[in-house]
Length: 128
Image 1 (spheres, rainbow, N blue to C red):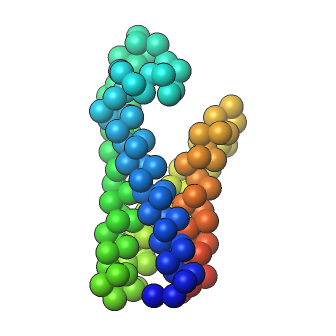
Image 2: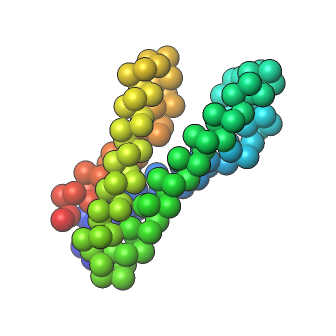
């Protein structure tokens, strides 16, 4: 595995970990610890609990795509592995752009969610 691909996988792996944390916040800690992170009241959290639960799983599934793709690349199954890594991390980037464009006041969150996977996607794509 070349250095560029390794660096790309490191970035996409870090992005996957961020998205596992987001899963935890949205699906498991929404009415507790997540309220401080997202600045919501208990009433708001209760009202949006089902939506957040579902959205958290989307984040988890994106992280799983990246993880499976990384394992496949390590097992010398480069093409399917790269496809999964790029699909998972690329979706993370796309979702961060949707957040940025739909809620400009959440620019910080969009950048936290999108910059790391974007760097990973660029590096993986350049390594192919």
